[in-house]
Image 1 (cartoon, rainbow, N blue to C red):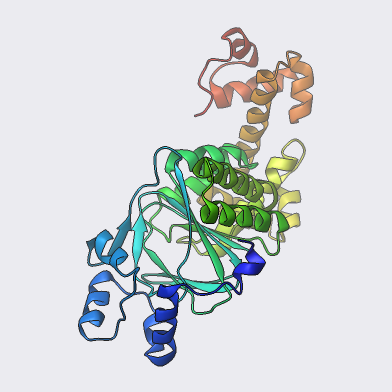
Image 2: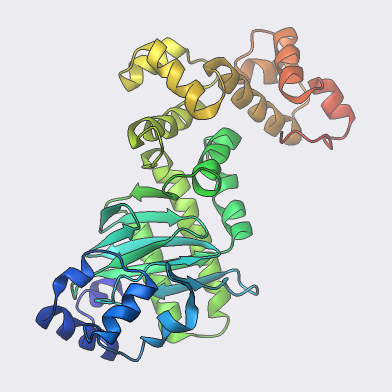
Length: 355
């Protein structure tokens, strides 16, 4: 089922019932998220219509806040579904990571206390247990829900971020640890490859050929890799201090991961249009590290990659990662990992250098 076809794909029975209710009833029911208890109340009052898909809310209900969608199958660690157009925006959460991709059209992503529109090309990554709902009230939208367990997400996304461990730790904190709206938004525009991958997913879930679940997991892996390769620095990240500072940090970490061997705080501040003092303060507040500590960590992470890749010439490695000489390189490496590069090699690269 190609996305271009999906734009005009006939509504199924549930969607037709819901569309009639939307067109003839109280449209405000689709404008704000409702808890499951509110849904039940509206149902008793005759404001809610029943469809073949209505049992989902009741079957999965865990509390008055909404309902909980269970873990993706362990065999594949992933699932893909299409969002039901015109469905009531009943709050729900998942015990896995959900990736919402608007392949065509538009929708509204609703949370208990906030909301934001999503347009074609937008990718929203939601953390486990994020309570939200999607409102889509048009025929021409195609919205994919990709569901992956935490291990799959960590391996296929966080570990691949070009911003390195610092970027991974930062986004992991946003998604899994901070008391903020737990999502990250990537406005990918008209990225052709993401559209092609989405079409392939739609075909797999429609045709269900041999090993289609395994194929879906591979396609989701490619989808996440594409986000890392081409859209990492475009992330929009909510936070207590405001999205501007969070978005700035994502861009800064991506920029530094490319220029770590030679860039300075003044050059970075000039590139992003801020004063060095302001940028230095935001970096420390958002990451807990100074600018120089971030540069040192990125340099040493690259040094470890070179050592693991078989490079033995420490002078060449020192120069490549931006250190003045081997003495400077040794000092930085030991400050980050607790041992010298030579000791790292002698220990057979088995020392834990992840912390």
